[in-house]
Image 1 (cartoon, rainbow, N blue to C red):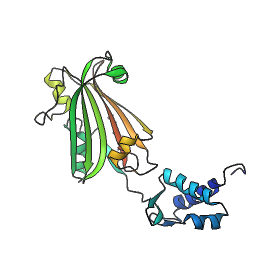
Image 2 (cartoon, helix red, strand yellow):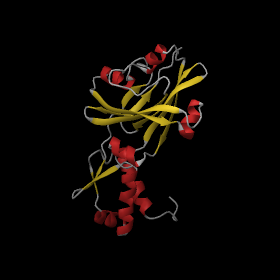
Image 3 (cartoon, rainbow, N blue to C red):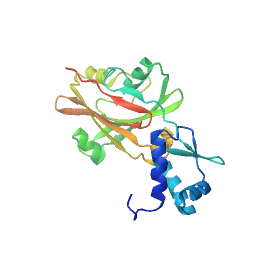
Image 4 (cartoon, rainbow, N blue to C red):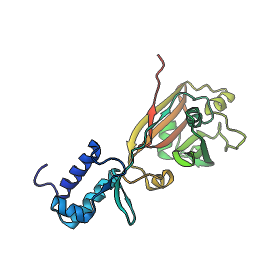
Length: 239
């Protein structure tokens, strides 16, 4: 490390290495600020900043009145993106097949497309759509956020009685879905997403942008937000 680097980075680098190497296993206590100042010969401000950086990276968590501890590393659950496309809720079907109990809340409302969704659906910005927001939970814990945008001519506001898959609903209008395109990236969660998904500090999310196509026409697009520390996205490619 360059001598011009801030002194707190020396503390961060050493503790980070111990966590990654397993010298500090999940649940192990992290030295207090006073202990850090003595061990690394740094000031109180540097010790405080080092703890803040490690927490922001998701490596440690703070417990009020108890100190900081190495964060548990949960086993990643696979989300299979293609196994149940013809199910009303593919995510639910996938996790139920893995033995999990999944529940969800949802709400539909009429909206205009706006610039970004209009671009994705090749519409005018004022085009009428149905927006449906979902919050999925597994065993009572928040699992995934999803926001779907559908052409209102094919998707009046959903009701509990109409829980068919999008592919089935489009087929009822004589429209055959020919392709589903997904683009995946990681990003920092927005505050409302952190709250809804109960994310620890420093945890990024997987953002899946999914669009259903009927030939050369996009008929639905969704934004799916998944906690990056709990799940791995798994794709199977037909050959």
